[in-house]
Image (cartoon, rainbow, N blue to C red; front, side, top):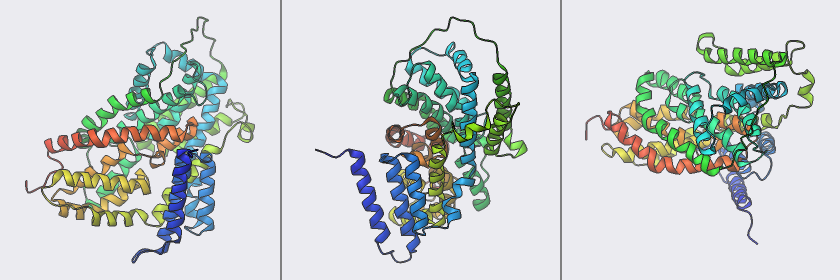
Length: 464
């Protein structure tokens, strides 16, 4: 009898992990880099195959990394003081408050009166509405934390049970809709702003909103708006129940009113974060505290020891720790240097150069996650500019094409937040990401290259 594919894949990952750990470090490579590679491969194997629950995979990764002295404990456990962790905590508390107060049902029933009836059209509607939110709320993780509880309530109202395809599709439509097109809107995602900061501080290049949008959104963003919902609706096709609610809506309760005020206040603070400088994570935490306060809140503090499921937080801590360990070991820089030796860059071979830089960005993003990728790729821009004959701006713009075609969930914190809050199957999420990645690499990126050349990018400065 054949073994389950996930078991085979994990066995391969485990073998590679052990091999890297015991393999002598090549000349010029620190032994710690090999150890870091070993534990990272093990973690990815655990998460990608779901051999164990995702949070347990994180615990194994954290334990092995500390026991093997791969990195200091403050690096390994850095996820506990990362903003994303507290954003998810706030989302869990607010989500419970929304459910307890009945605000979720009220909002969802209002949505259903304006939503299309078919699942396919519903996914498109959710995806596009979520994209619009990216122009308003700067934090993708904040947007996901806001949208996922509403999608879970919508799933309940439509009769989509826990772990059903329909439920998964609704959560993914909102999460990917508010993140993937937003990679092409300058202030809307963390990697965008990391690229902006690195380009300015390292290269002296100041990206502008309009230039960034005109280059990236028409093809890369437009393709996501058209194709991503179709992939989600096809992979997770389901039939909604469409209940009828003929009875009059009940009067607003005190808990609902207080929670609505808290959520609206959090939304306003998220929208204006560039003015007051408060992280979306601390806004989320503050909103959770208000929900738990005696008299003013709608949840008793005792829910923290009973009804709150902390497994999403443990899972997220492991994912953040992976990126921190990779950065501490300087694994991304080593891989980038090796890629420079592998790929052949030459002036005039513009499409080959574009493909090589894009692939380099994808590989670096696999190891360091997308928010950290610009810190590796931008310092390479000067050398790549000389090798390709391109402007440094063209080089860094080509490196960001990797963001929208990532193959694994852990590469983008907003997807990790969605998986954690929505209790999604990592196998389902990976299937969706890989499907779009194939389409993106074969169709979207070549079209994006042609569009870039049309407006004067991705071409040798000497015109050869």
